[in-house]
Length: 342
Image 1: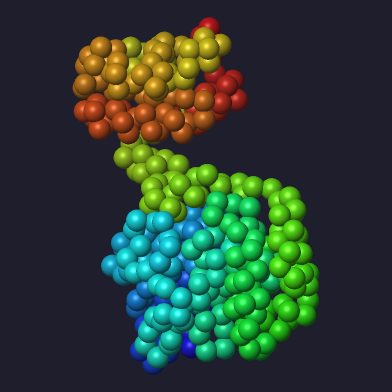
Image 2 (image 1 turned 60 degrees about the vertical axis):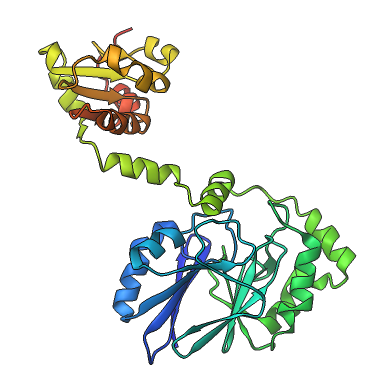
């Protein structure tokens, strides 16, 4: 068996393949590791057959859709997944055949309605259903503590005790456990009565994941993250350095329009000398009247350089082919001690 585990913070993803055929699957890929997965597949000489998410993730961004497009392979999730981009939907007990490997889907709702585990040979990939020394939380959308009790005690913990456990998360640097070790040592599994287990899960008082709304939004819909939008915009526009702009101030004003896209109160507290004010929210509606010459060079600036990047990309889409963005934004401008106009 070909096996690689990739840790991204507390997130765990897995490359699993058949040595004889070099066919492989990728389980729970994380968006920040796309290049790493491509490198692993090349290094191992495998052909990825399926990209699998064990559930709808609420704490990180899935790379399944991006990788599936790049590799022209199907995204696989449980039948109840809300994601519209899923190509193959598994039901409880169904298998994926990957070369000589057999991956059996176990529907294990509780953490989410669409949670599933994948069992093969000597191991099981438990997603967020069973963690090392813990279980998945049940207080997020579609979570159900009673369903998790059934998934654990009625299905997952009935696997052979020597079965290796590979979860989708671990924040303490551990790579795996076993079913037997979790039964013996996992404090949450000591609550063997349903009522006690449900009461415990309902009173964990856990903090919400940092990217909860954005992760659910993108993983459920296939939409883009803010970071993706910024990266795509940055790939479309050039930038000007703070020092370069400082050297150009006071020159031919018709050669460069400095467009401050912050809100009015921020603009009035201090802006780059000569900057024109046009809030980002009004850019599309007022561009024709405020920027009548589509051939002029327009430099957008905001507080930190992110919204101005989006604005410059938008201007280029509108036909202002020389739109650029200020690298560093007003925050960097002030830190450099450059002049401000009240």
